[in-house]
Length: 149
Image (cartoon, rainbow, N blue to C red; front, side, top):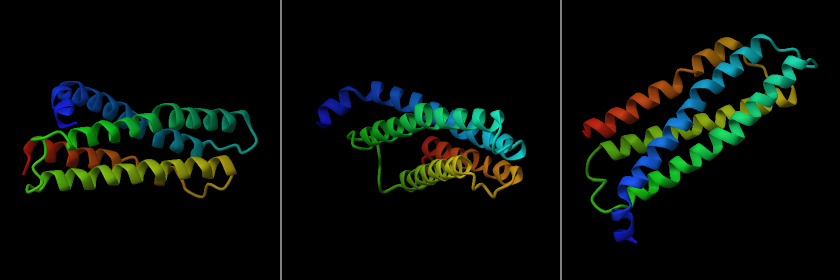
């Protein structure tokens, strides 16, 4: 298995980067949808239905598959011999960042369900503030991987 991972390394790394970009696009855009949904909420109107449909499709069709692909290809990279030096700090920092990103993904999913159930209590301001979470985590992850401290 190690030989297969090593020989497929450039492909796995490419697919990992592609899936990360797709996941991040969703993580950046989804909170903006929630901001607009919270600030223009009309529980029984067409706009509410439109927002819910957009949120559901973005979450299920783009974000979930991209997150799963990111994890699968990332774990393949982790198990490729010679790629990760676990005695360094960077893989642990990256892992914490990825876990944080995964938590944020699921938090967004619960907020989508709040709107779907008509139980959202958060304001547009809350979603604006939370929109900064993936940016901060991305900075931590990229610096840890590139600088490798």
